[in-house]
Length: 255
Image (cartoon, rainbow, N blue to C red):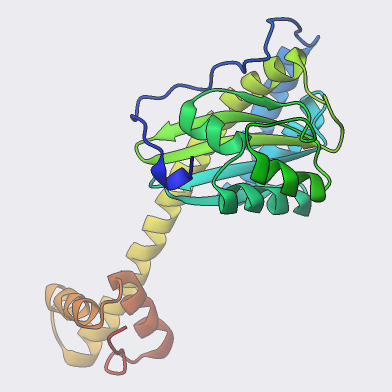
């Protein structure tokens, strides 16, 4: 099923175990490892650093994982790889997005962990598995990471070996995904706040330029920026940034 054809509600919880799961296995010292990981992710300086930290932690924590990646779906349609431990992750992910099939897409839309033991014998996603084998990936393990309204996320693990993932991998991966989802939410909130503050500052600078240039009030300056934004079909913050950087408002044209 293609990604654009899927539908689901917004109340999803983190993915259920895969069909291969038997309930066995739990790593010694796992709680301490995940606690250390959570503290490390909280200390990252940016959203991108947090995402990179998650894929790094997955590779070094989940048994069998040699590569890891984070997939984000915006509006349940726009699918992108936000972080990857190796370029092969992006190449394999691209095969999933282009064919509209694969363990990552099933995990993120159907709220279930998906274990793919051997691309060579797997028959659920023939178009994808053929391309994955060509790219050197033999097995995968995918977890739903979060559901926020129409935005979805998945954590994907990859190996060039068949049967690389077992119940221990699922246990560790599910716990890591829970910590990662919290870290991502916090980093995204800080990123959005920082962006909002930055936009407010730029708009304030643009208003100041117009107030000084035309001897008008702050409200009048804002209205001028808003009218320019509407006329040119450009976001107000971009209009403000252009004015601050160039000192020119009249040359903005409709996009």
